[in-house]
Each structure stands twice: as C-alpha cells, then as structure tokens.
Image (tube, rainbow, N blue to C red; front, side):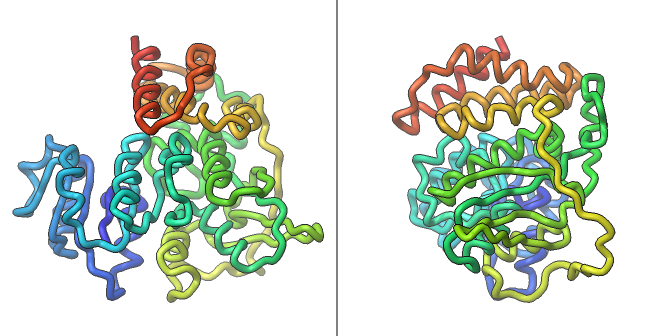
Length: 352
C-alpha cells in the first residue's frame, strides 16, 4: 500500500492501523513536514518517497522525488491500494492516476468526488471519511434503504450566536476531532458537510440525502429504510475506526476505544442553521447540478486560505463562493480537462 499525505491526521492514523498488519508500505508522500516524514521512513522503510520539492534535500531516502513528478513514477508502483489523504483540489490528480492504473482508491480527499465525481469509478473507491465509512457499514447491514443522513458536530462555532467577528484561530478549536487547518475551517463553516453530501450522492446513488448536527460526534450516520425504520451508526470520534473500516470493512481488530452507552449523558439532533452556515444553503442547488462543485470548491479554497491568514472574515468565504457562482455558473464540464480549466479560472478571478 502507498500513503499520500502520510504526515497529516489521516496518514498518521492509517500507519497506526497498518502497523501490526502484514501489509507492506511501498510509498509515503508528504508536503512539508520533513521531520515526521523522516521518522516514518525510518520506521516503515518505504521503497519510494515523494515530497514538496522545497524539502527534498532534507529527506533521508535515496529514492525521494518531487511530488510534481508523481505521474512519471506512478506506473512503477506495485501497491494494490492507494490512500489519498492529500488536502484539497491537489488530491484530484492522485485519484485519477490511481484509477488509471486500476488500483483500489482509499479516499480521504473529498474534493476528488466534489469536483470530478462523474469521471471516477466509485465502485473502486473505499471512503475513509467517518460519515461515509459509517454509511458503508450501515448499507452493508440493512435491507431496502431509502434515505441516508450524515451528521455534523457543528464545528467550533456551534454555540456561537454571531460568527461575523470570529477569527480563524477560534475556528481551529474543533470540539471533537483533531484535523488539519483547512478541513477544520470547512467544519466551522459547514462547507465540509456540503461537500460530504456530494460525496454521498456519487457513492450511494438513488438514495435521499440529508445532514443534521449531532454535537457529540457519537452518531456518524443514519439509514432510513423503506418501512420507515432507522438504523444509526455509533462510535467514539476516532479516525482509526473509519480508516480500518475502509481498509478491512468490519473484519479487523479494534482500533479505537469501545463506546460505553451508559456514559452517554445527552444526545441531541439539530437542523443546520443556514443563516449561521450560509454555505450549506447551496445544498439543493449543488445536488441538482454537481458541476457547480468545481466552482464552489475553488472559491472556498481561495478564501479559506485568506481566512487562515486573517485577510477576510467568516462570511466572506460564502460571499466569495456566490461571486464565483454568478460569474461561472453557466460553464459546462464535459471532460476532465474542463475541471482543471474552470478551477484555474475561478482562482484567477478571485485572486485578481
């Protein structure tokens, strides 16, 4: 197996899950965290390593390459499966390469499906997100599913009345999960949940879709059947479980603590407030026209980066998305090249 994004939260936890298995790590790839990458190289002894060109001289491996040269080396990989834990739109090329060479794609990069789901074979994708891992487990165990619902924690701002003046440093204080900066901001704005609904639409076709807030993150998904019964998926909020589910389904040893039902003091469900989380108000429009995902994602990435640098406010991320949609909503995506072209145009427009 090869793990791209090995120094991030998903990558680190994937290595923990695989540590005592008989799966060999062929390739590791990281962006800038050369110190942790070197530790992983020493422990797991991969055959190949990829990294940002700026840190290549610091990588302690004789077969270390610029991540931008991945396509040139990809055909030589023997891995049966590829874990794509690269952050944001940058992960799309890896997803496309993985399927081009007929390898199993273990997907934590939700942007791949958000912007290019119709160009990917979802039958060869095993999702790593906790919500989609939960959905996969539910759909393996229930008959006649009708509707699936994923949950959100509400992010760092769930208890805030007004988010207008809240800074990125506040948004990064997620109450339940340890995640990277970009996805933590997306959780605070509910963009993450919008994107996960698009993932679900590609992965689990012909089912009704919904999302709710469950602040404790103990319930990850619901599945409603045609007889109106509902099954829920409970677990502690630990990414090692969803990673193990993706890699081995439920046929693996325990990789997280058991959930003690008697210690659950309160479980509450809430509708997602579209005034507080205006990005989520795009749900119906986006699910009807999935091509809009390219525009929404590019605008979101540009302004999340600005927000992290304190160059814009919380609601400015939404305003930027709407500005980009007004400009580019009539664009047609007929080829994978169109995805990259429109993404580039949106970024140029908003950065211009």
